[in-house]
Image (cartoon, rainbow, N blue to C red; front, top):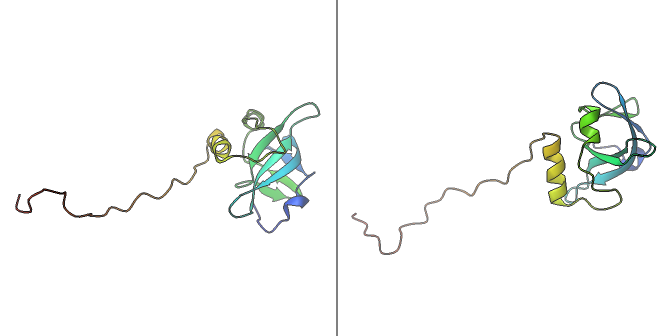
Length: 124
C-alpha cells in the first residue's frame, strides 16, 4: 500500500475483500513500532460485530477504499485482540500466520571458525 498516505485519512473509509465484497469500515490504523509506517487496519465488520485486523501490505487503496487481497470469511475469522490497545509482537505473528504471510526470519548467525577446541591436538 502507499506509505505516503496519512493513516488518519484511512479511518472511516470502506474496505472490500478480494472479490469486491464489502467487509466494513476502517476503525483504527496501527503503526509499526520501529518504523512508524501503517501496518494494520482494524475493520468494523458490522453493526454488532467486532473489529478484524487486516494487513495493510499487500492491500491497496483504490478510489478511496481499501481493497484487501483476502476472502471475507478469512478476515472475519482473524484472531480478535480488541481495538484501542497495542498489538504485541506475538499477536502480530499470529495475524501474519492467519493470513498466510511470510514473516522474515531473523538472519542466521554467521558461520565462523572459532578456532580449535581446548585440549585438541592439532596433528590429530
